[in-house]
Length: 166
Image 1 (cartoon, rainbow, N blue to C red):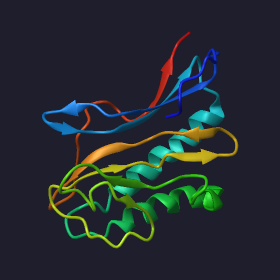
Image 2 (cartoon, rainbow, N blue to C red; image 1 turned 90 degrees about the vertical axis):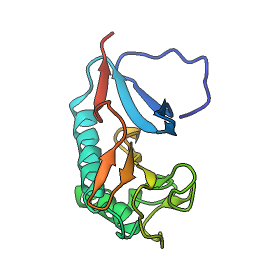
Image 3 (cartoon, helix red, strand yellow; image 1 turned 180 degrees about the vertical axis):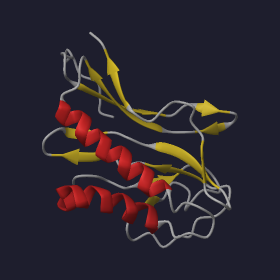
Image 4 (tube, helix red, strand yellow; image 1 turned 45 degrees about the vertical axis):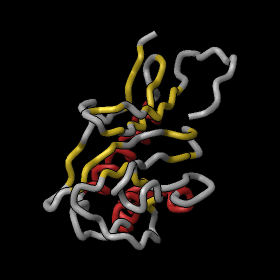
């Protein structure tokens, strides 16, 4: 998620990835965090908070729901954990965005002030990517398709904190 450098990674460091593979003709985006070696209990705790925020954000997604509800649900979980001031720029950019033609304002962002209404078959990215003072930036996110009754996740990989043993 940053330009490459010559820095050598060390045990305990976080590796953030924003991966955009193609699946069945549709690009999807995965936001992931991996830790080299055993993660600290603090990193596990804060990443679990982001997973809860993601789950809470996915709950209201269905056709005719307001897009802003995604962001508001996500921000509620993060705010309730004591990070309300970090739910807005410069600590994060957006709570999601469109992907491709026919998506929510194609390429447009999803935040608390989004005016769009979700439509069936739209593909959107939902991500509680978040800077936290104790851990730095953590990446967590999924590509989903809006349906009339809910959300369909398009990735087959699990959304979790990945651990790479060293």
